[in-house]
Length: 116
Length: 115
Image (cartoon, rainbow over all chains, first blue to last red; front, side, top):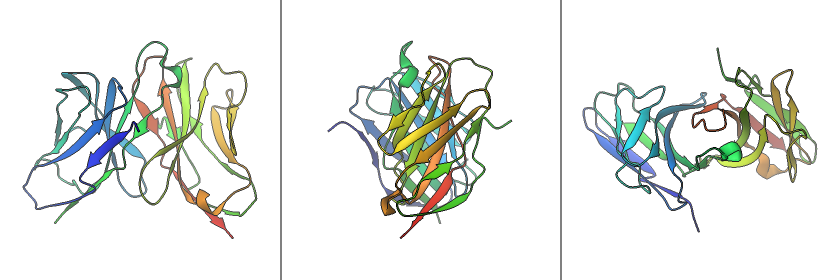
C-alpha cells in the first residue's frame, strides 16, 4: 500500500544535540512538507519541497534544516539552534501542478520529539 | 490576520446525533481549496473532505458534509449520526490558488462523542 513512513515514532534528545527525523513516501508525490504541532495549536509549516534538490522555508524554519536528494525522501534535522524543539512533527506529501485543485495532503503517523 | 479560524476548542455530541464544527477562512485569492482533517489520539492526520472555491454544490463524503458559504467565508463540517469513533481533533485547512502548495491550518476542535 502507498503511504508515508516516518521514523522514529518517539525520540528523546539531550540539549545541544542534533537529531534527524526520517520521512519516506511511495506515493510518487512531487511535494513534501514538514509541520510542527504543539498542544493547543494547529500545524505550523517548517519547510516544504516541490521538487528534488529544491526546498523553501515555511513559517518556523529557524533551527531546522532539510534535504531533498530523492523524490521519495525528505528528512528533517532539528539542530541545537532550535530553542524549543519538544513537539510532534508531521511529514506530508501531495501532488502538484495546474490541476492540483483537489490535491490532498497525505500525512505520515508523526514523530514525537522530547528534549530532556 | 489568521487564514483559518476555528472558534470551538471543544465540542460534545450525543451518539447518533449530528454536530457542526465551525471554520472561517480569510483569503483574497478567488481560487482556493478547503479541507477537513481528523486527528485521533494516535496522531495521524486523516483527510475527510474537500471543497473547491468554484464548486457549486456542497461536498459530501458519507457521514461528512461541508456547509460552504462563500460570501460568509465559512466552511463548516457537519458530521451526521455521530459515532464513538468520531471522538478526535478536527482541523480545517485551506490552500490558496490552483498551484499553491502552502496549506494553512486552524487550531482545531476537540470533539467528544458521548454514549
